[in-house]
Image (cartoon, rainbow, N blue to C red; front, side, top):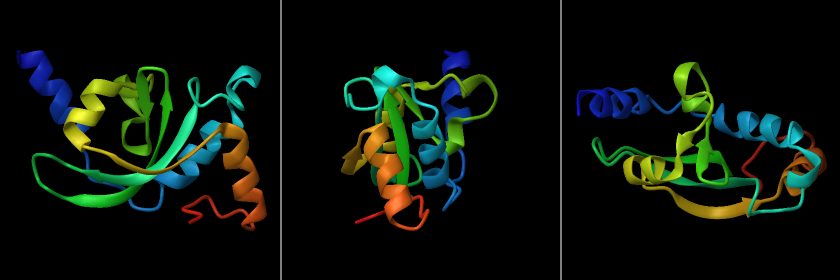
Length: 120
């Protein structure tokens, strides 16, 4: 139980506004060929996250690969290999507004003059 609490506490980091979108684009650029057009393998999500403990809510971007979630806040240290989707969704209660394939993410970034998001 102590390890679980420490893990969850480690996930509760302050939202670094503005860094999540570039991080998602970088992940899209590094996506494998078989992930480029398949939302079930790789998707960039733009939406809103709300910390269930503090109630703080922010617009945010994250990447989902299978049962793992990757975002700017969890990209360092022991969480660099992703956070289980169930844990992420429980703590941050994400509300998806837009979903993009890796290919769509790269195209939107280029077409917007290299703006990493949000695009809508």
